[in-house]
Length: 356
Image (tube, rainbow, N blue to C red; front, side):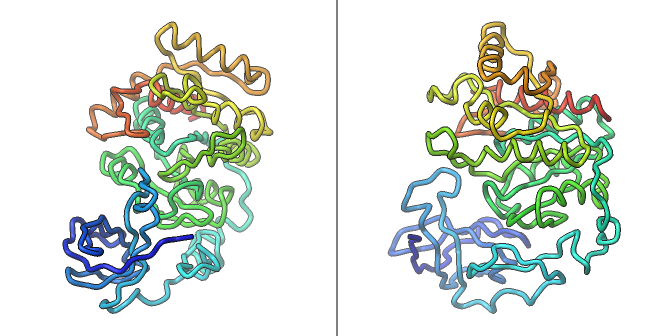
């Protein structure tokens, strides 16, 4: 069950229309407190707040903060928005959004009969952090292309929670965003991943889309119990809509866990079991021994028979990422610690530009 605590805002660290990062005093201790103004209204120093402290009690990494549920001293959340599609349905935090495909949306007519991406490439990543490599790979190879990011509800639900997306937008590596399912806060909102891809194509004028969950992948050390299983479903969605589906492999030679060393079992399982349609798997150029181990894993899972393999150099994309100054981490590891993770994503970005 969730854990609750009452505290008082002691410091505002960062405040925008979408996200507030603050410090709150709870039982005499200072804790990190995160709030979303669209749900809470404004926050001020001294306000009494009720927090969900489950992440703090569990000592989580991503999500290891207190999240503000109510501001007991504030004026409350703003009034209803323009849309009628509800996300976080049937919870106390359900919120209405203007979904791109909804009848009241200015994009409704364009999307009402649309069910094709007309060959648009779609790169699918199993980790949020890999989005950086994928978009850099595209921009390095095709700098004029317009990139859309589809954030699914497989991880964090508020787009505002991602510092990475904010950095990539500031660096000019992401042009338009869409949040699908119960994720919210994108430039466009969509009911599901299919309509999200269509919305980015038709309403967002995207030339290529990178699809991935928000921060906070979930795993259980079982064959099937992980949120990255959605990779297969997203690849199938792109293919069903007439797009070119490109998979980015999750690769690490610094992860101490055997199931994630080399090509992660998350990638192998999603591509072997969950992806029913034939897709393209981007295989990055790596040092000889690492590249051999990657190819052995791919062959062992039979992925070469189920999918197309496309080999590409991700280094130019990673070099672009470094030049922009965007900082990337995954499980606490940096680009220097595990370059192969972002080389794989940048290779997928480069492969995708073959269809632009």
